[in-house]
Length: 282
Length: 122
Image (cartoon, helix red, strand yellow):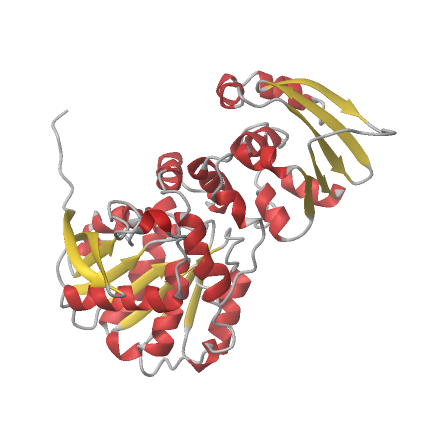
């Protein structure tokens, strides 16, 4: 069998985030309207490989995904080895806006999943003018911790194994085996304490319940898509957010779980393509 | 039915291999019935049904008969498809020294999923 290359191109970008030098890995494919994709906690931009390889998306979208610092191929900042990593809403927002500026993206669509879906709500509230549209996948306003997060980072529990085992049930039952295990592999590869540090934002710092109803969809359209089998951000939680924001459109995706773009890209695209078409028509 | 765990787990060479550093006894309680399940280096050596006078175990998993039945369906509904989903809904309690449970979480999830009606891991 002859070798085949995907159309995805990856590069390393140097930029300052919150006053510190960073080296970030950025991937992209396609041309047209910029679609900036944000990965879930403890994973990386490979979750969007299905989108970047699908001509139905890339023929009129420039799909971009960056690995957050400490994730995938992005390095932690110098000094990381003596710090406890805790992602905050402030840092996360600043990081996304800095990447948009560095890539000179003019009003991109932003789409984020899980923690990326949560920060999408923050962006919709605080920076709607920066985006053509915002798509939140598995986006809820808050999630209560449902296990002791300390198990994610201690020497007598393998961080990668436990992270994957915790999230494995969040994959929907119809996911192809290869995509399910690719998704879990990303979790198994996470650096020590990174998933836990991301969840600081997801479960503690990023709670947006008190303000979510202030999102104005006249300033930026907001679409929420959530998988039926997600028990971390349940369909009910997504619908509660959607019902509190006039003009927000929500879709519950049957049979899908917490990682729609990664666990089952084929099924996910059936839901995403009509949304992108709608955004394109505006 | 819980007794079937021994044959199903021990018959899965890959699962036994993943559990090769796991030796423990845990308690599974479904409704008012309890079982003590003893594992040695990944193989289940005994499944003993209660009642017990003084059961000793590293940790215990406790849920209701109703929740367990839904978990065991061939295609469990959302919220019943995973041990962590039951924990999130506060309908399964994990108690005791949970380091053993969490350090071997994939093993325990795959083992318990063998009690589903088709006996296949989730």
